[in-house]
Length: 279
Ligand code: PLP
Image (cartoon, rainbow, N blue to C red; front, top):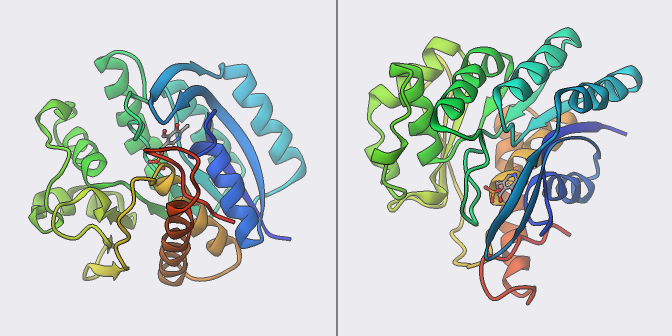
């Protein structure tokens, strides 16, 4: 059986994070092993508390996994601080891990920051992510807002998050935003249009040296989209683990997300901000 290693945070509402990854991989028929980086206490109303898993526990989880299994693909979600980024990068390099999909989760859809504490700490975490982790990736999957934060950090090493509107047009992405990271780092980036005003069902794949490639799905209007990013990235990792190529994996993962949003419409779990249903 193929395996995906999910390195991510725990979500008590089970809509996102490690719980979304477990459900996604299982539904696709891939065995998911996990490294938990943080524990979040949250429900659709908001994020109550976050505790980061300490360095030795992170290392012990990674040791336990790599001593027994070499995963076919890796999905990386919430990395709460620069220590976590450094440790994860070190283990992935040492074990020559391949097919690494990074979802740079910077804030919870239910509100609240998932990365770092102070602004300086957040900046350090993001810088380390860009310099140490991104070069190892087969794909990075930021949404529009995350991409701009990453791009600004990459360009100026300053976090200008406060200046960024949460909803922008995907077509407004200026070339400076696009060219910087992916050409210099030589890593494919899938920019998700879900938070854009103009093309919410379109994601654009930027591959170094190639023309951008659009994946357009059907937009399903739903209030229950908690866990969409986690589901997409772990679905891509699952299809990569099953040896589909990158474009096929993205296409199939998008279809999987669409189906999961449709099922979430009638789940009746919460009035608002409920989860996708992957099974
Ligand atoms: N990871 C964790 C632990 C979370 O709690 C969240 C959101 O609450 C996310 C990732 C990102 O969730 P989404 O897939 O909705 O962007």
